[in-house]
Image 1 (tube, rainbow, N blue to C red):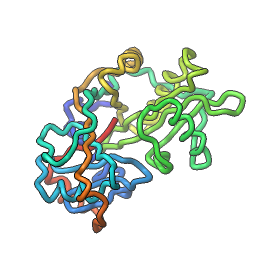
Image 2: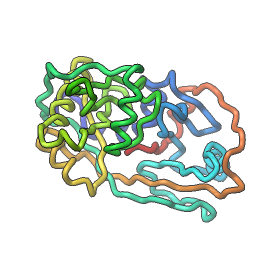
Image 3: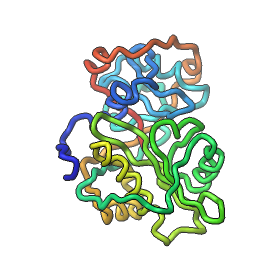
Image 4: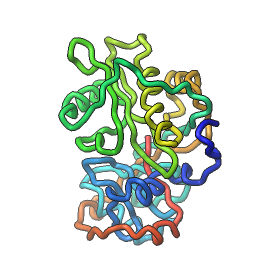
Length: 259
């Protein structure tokens, strides 16, 4: 595999934790034993692998009334008064010989482009993208006649690895290879930092998985994307925020939501 990394590296088993206690630590908000991104950056969070009642109570208070909590790779028991609203099999793939290269048509996207990015995401539904998600890493796009028609960028950032995410193309411009070009271009920037690209996909999204495998990604592990809704009486209460202390977070294995 390119980049000299071992695909068994444990940071990819808990990518949200590894990000929030590593390169993305400046984003991290701590609520008890829960770490999360600001709500306008990303919905992903990190929780103990074996959460206790206090952890679930904290998660419930963090959720807006009626909202769901995303969980990646969580295989424990959800409290009986929580409702599992979605359970989707997922896959995690890693760079295993990707032909990464810059693209002459790709342009760097920034805060001024966010309205167009949000519009493209709303029409293509590649996964969560919020007003400040662009701050998580480099985002590249391709424009046609001035309009943003395709994009891809960086999301979770465990040490030594960067997730490629928000890969999407306007339906009117599909079939031109734009997604593959942008993936290679984003991967080139990741490689230039001495890191290795990885990504997640729903296991049922066979079209995307075939594209990723054709580009040089290979399956590392299977996982699960869960969403659960807390009981109404527990949601939405205020929770104190503290700065993350890296050594404490590292002591508790966690799962984080990604898709």
